[in-house]
Amino acid sequence: MAGLELLSDQGYRLDGRKATELRKVQARMGVFAQADGSAYLEQGNTKALAVVYGPHEMRGSRSRARHDRAVINCQYSMATFSTAERKRRPHGDRKSTEMSLHLKQTFEAAVMTQLYPRSQIDIYVKILQSDGGNYSVCVNAATLAVIDAGIPMRDYVCACTVGFVDETPLADLCYAEESGGVSSLALALLAPWRTDRSAADGRQAPSGPLRGSDRSCHDSL
Image (cartoon, rainbow, N blue to C red; front, side, top):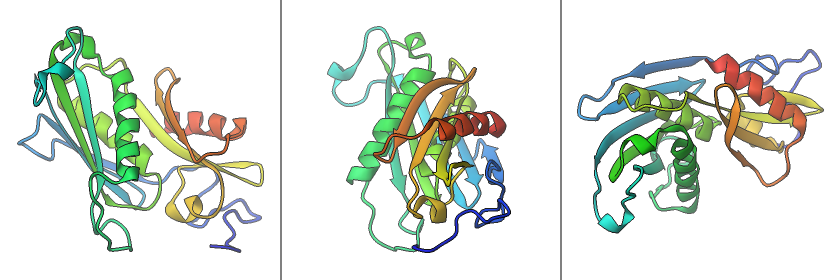
């Protein structure tokens, strides 16, 4: 995407948004009666579905059980039709494994697991359509699903992906911006904006995007 102007001289982005403007967010909770909690979230053209089962008894090896808290199990996946590249996306590929780990770490910090010792909580998130900010959209969808399941949390988790173009922070990146060569940072926050888990693209992000992400997470409420 070389030569693509991510931010115009007038301060507008590729999709017409201002630098700190979020994409349109639409959400529904309770979309699956079979699950304990579920949510569907659209953030721009990125669409995610999250379902929650539990708390329930440990499944599989009981050696994984914790006597003082619940075990959080997270699984991230992408539908084969979620992008223009119609290739097989197995659950166990490297990217899905990393995203699942990030989600697990995020919700281990957010869910009050000490209330459910020797139990398990399963969180499944699937990207139905991908247009940037996948991790952030998954966190936001999973938060709504956990709320729908009635599982106590320390606070709501809000996430947003930001980038930095010509010393200007861009909030809530779309795919064209993420693939445009700028460094990006996904930040998940617990109110009152305590940093919970961030996933960067390999380069240290400057303080500007961090400040912009804080504001964007606040705005997403």
